[in-house]
Length: 446
Image 1 (cartoon, rainbow, N blue to C red):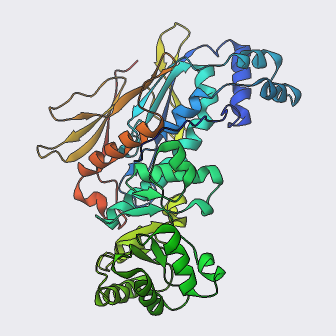
Image 2 (image 1 turned 30 degrees about the vertical axis):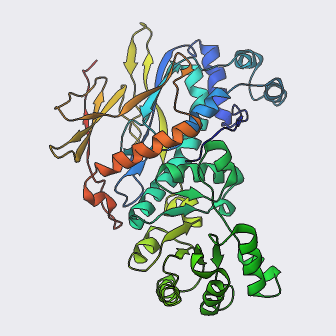
């Protein structure tokens, strides 16, 4: 992480929502139920097909957006003029501010089916309007982080570089870069992510820079003159062997690196490594790019590669572009004033009523064995269990350390520690069941 001394101000987030969130609010205000105390939870019923675990990411962005979840005069005029909601609802939204509690899994944590990832407790009105924004952030960021974690696992000690900005919406690109770094990527090409979150940014030149010049030699000399011999030269615009030889002739033994972006990367990396060593450039690094995913990275494990640049497959979740998380009401204030569990009974989409608490059960060697979820109670710790929930917001006030660059650093370390305690099977890329089971302990019957 870079030292971060810059100030970034998020844009308003209040209209990043679905129409029906506000019509539900209007109906609840009319019915007199909008103020009922409610608990909503975010969870995923299943992991993407064949995945062994998921990675919870995006919480820092949720909290940044929560601070900006206010309705401006212009937005309220839009809602009124287009008859989205009535005057009573507009009046309610004029002074909207979340005043409840939010707790959940630490960002960077691994998760499993039915892990209670986030709990939002407030009036129905306050929690209802946040649904779409929370899910849009968590579903995307967690999908990217889950894919990134698999890629980092396949790469071993070799660093991965996030390079997917041109394959995503411009704001999704920033979110993807952040999520990738949370899950262990070394750096990103996205400068906005560097500005907002203090992550390391890298980059040198594309094929167009070589094609701009009258010769490959002119292009290499121009790049070396501007960026120094520690730069990485792209050597597959024309003939790879000739380009590598030329690069060494110009830069000498201190050439930082070469990049391969096409062809049979295993064969090319092997031949380039041999050529560099023959020319005396044993310290010149080889970076490979070109539509990599976790499987391609694993296939390159035996090749003499020093770093991987990953783009399209990363920012699209490597086949799982969403985490399929849902946001469900699990408890609400009844007519008597007491909190009552509620649950959806639809076929294939059932939910479990009651507020949840979670522990990660571990064996005597510290290896995770179960996800223990207690309904309306904290599960009993058998002596080595790890609590999974942290408080993010209390009484509408954000706790320190969960936004900005500090949050990325914290989440990155949580991810390292969380993956380290999973069974070794978690790193397998072959399809399989979740690496540990989720055990739900029912609460007391009402």
